[in-house]
Amino acid sequence: MKIFIIALFATLIPLKAISQKTWTSKDSAAVAKLNKTITLAEAKVEKAQIKVDYADSLIQIGTSQLEEGKTLQKQLKAETKTLSKQYATDRKQFLKISKSKDKDEATEAKAELKKIDTQYKIDSKELLNKTKANDKLLSTADKNLTKGKSYIKDYERTLKEAQASLEYSKEELEWTLEDLNAVDEPKDSKKKKK
Image (cartoon, rainbow, N blue to C red; front, side, top):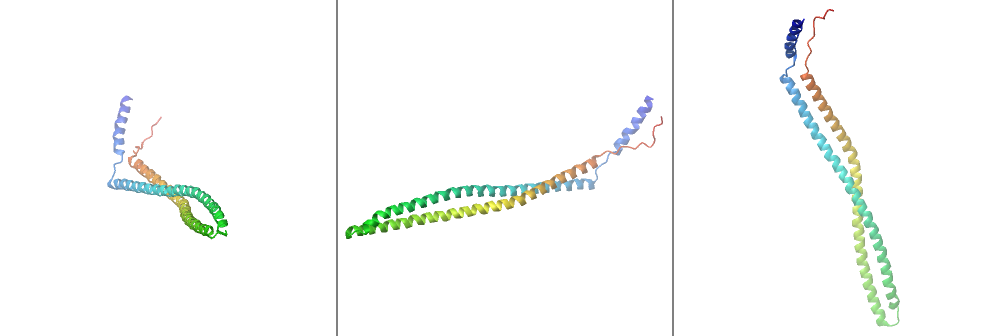
């Protein structure tokens, strides 16, 4: 019985070694093609990730610009209100004097009123320019937010597709390697009798 078992193992070991598949050039080319596909898929994933990061940065920039613009807008409204009150206060005292019967005082008051008016025009023009610049900032912020939100939807979808493609390519390579490295089990032509 021991000799029979030894003889059986002696015949099975060479059959197992013979039954291992060897790679052909076609198999090697298939594996190389799959590796190239994986490399391209990784590049697509990286490219899509860069685009997602770009869209995300647009959203972040737009949000910070919007916050900055709103804060500046409040400050400019307060400055405009203060300037208007100061202008009205400064004009009020010289307006009474300009209607005076004393011509010298009236002339000085009118000259002072012109200076106040000129300074008010300069200050209000400066505030107007600041307001226009702030409006431009708010407009840019809105454009960045809108653009970022629309881009991120497309880019995230593209990233998910690229990642799925990469996963599929890796699985396909794994399956191919398993098939190429699989060992065919020898089939027993004779069944053991009891």
